[in-house]
Image 1 (cartoon, rainbow, N blue to C red):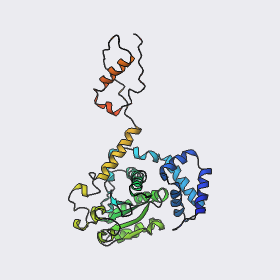
Image 2: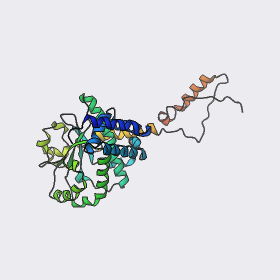
Image 3: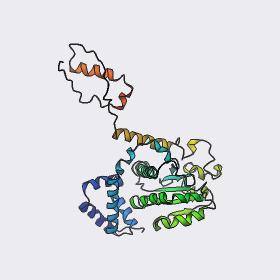
Image 4: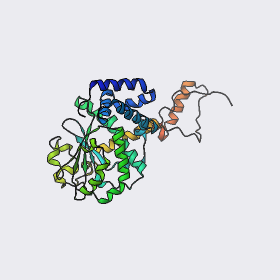
Length: 332
């Protein structure tokens, strides 16, 4: 559905105001990021303009977010971050759309449980929608709400079909909760086994998703250079890399590498959000002996205690520990 009538948007907006409670409206803000009408249009397009079906889809999505604490997903810090290593951000198209690279052929899905892979996927989606896209909107001076994805099939094997369950879960999450966020899926470096795999995967995808898939010849460089600069091409799309994700000059060229700026920024962002949501409390055991002058007033005592606490290496992790400090001067 190319165009959504304004009347449908108005009806949808009225339903959201009347029939959605405050808790769902709060998580809706994290979805729309200041562009509620555009978000309503996305859900309407996903349901062919049917207001009733689009409303149910969005309410189901909001309930899913609340029930699964999706708003806090970017504060879910885990050492299993390594499972992000087959997806990366290589740059932006000429229109400012983020270019996400996905190493489908490199994905073994054996480094963690299904739960962690799903969590990883949702984290990437949330980081895209709440950090990458708003930053692109600011940078390019217009609303950027979609991305493109380049899927590298280098190394694809028939054994990948063993993970159909996981692929189905991830596809379902995207279709139901992140509709119309990807403009086009480009498939590159497809080996001879791709056709067999595609026959199995294709029926699992929504028709509106299948219409966005474009299989390019070879590494896809010539076609992709029509919509982006060379510097934004994923490493596996550059002919000097022989069309393979394995031929790289250094880790910063490889957008799958954890040394790549995208992964460093994402990792640091999640870790920072985790520390903000889960501040480290001062250790409650042990004691520190501090000698205080007999004539010290409350202000002097606070300064002396602060000086002593600064000797501890972890003080910077609990900067609020002296806030609202109260002195108990009861004599023992």
